[in-house]
Length: 294
Image (spheres, rainbow, N blue to C red):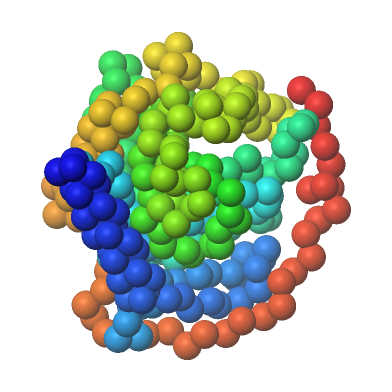
C-alpha cells in the first residue's frame, strides 16, 4: 500500500513538473525551415531568450527514473536538426554538410529517424574525458530516443521515463543514445524497463541498433560500431551516465574545461529578446525521398 501511494505521488509530481515546464517555455522562430537561416530559439515566460542547452532544467529524478528532454527531430522526418553548439543561446538549427542543409537517408525499411530524437538539457559528453577506456565524449548534449506512439514536435520539452541506453561509437567518439518514453504517452504506465520495451514493442530495440549502425552507409561512410559489444545498458547504468554528463555540464558552464571548440554557454539573464520572423518552409530536395537497401 505504501509503495502504491509513493508511485502515485511520484507520478503526480512528474505530471505537475511536465505541465510547469510546458508553461514556462515557448519558442521564437527565425527564417525558413530547411534553409541555412532557420533558427528556433527558446523563449522564457518573461519573453527573454534562453538556451535549450543550458536553461531548460534537466531535473533528473532517481526515484522515478525521469528527466527532461528537448525534442530536436520528430520521428519519420529526415531533416537533421540539433541544438547548436556554435551560436549564442544554442537555438535548434539544421546540421550542414558541404554548405547545404543535411538530411538523413531512408534505410529500408525505415523512413527518416526511427524514433522521436532529441537531447537532455544540462548534459554534456566531455571530449576531454574517457568515460569508457579509449573513448571520449562527442562534445554534445546527451542524445535520447523517445519511443512512444506520438509524433513529437521540434522544440517540445517533455518529461520522459529513462529505460536504458546504447553506447554508439561515432567517428571514434562516444555518443550515448538513451532510450526514453514520454510520461504522457498512453503506454507509459506499462513500460518501465528494456524488458517491457521488448514485450510491448517487439523488435524495436534491435531495429534502433540497426538504424544507428547503418544510417551513414549511403553517404559512403562505414557502419557505426558500439561499445560493450552492442549490449544495451539497463536503467541503473543509464542513470549514472546521465548524472555524470550533468556533472560534466556543470564544469562546462563554470569554465573549468580546457578544450579548443567548446559549446557556447551564453544563457538567460541578459534580457535578450528576438522578434519572430517566420517564412514558409523551403522545399525538401527530391533525392531525400530515395530508399536505400543496405
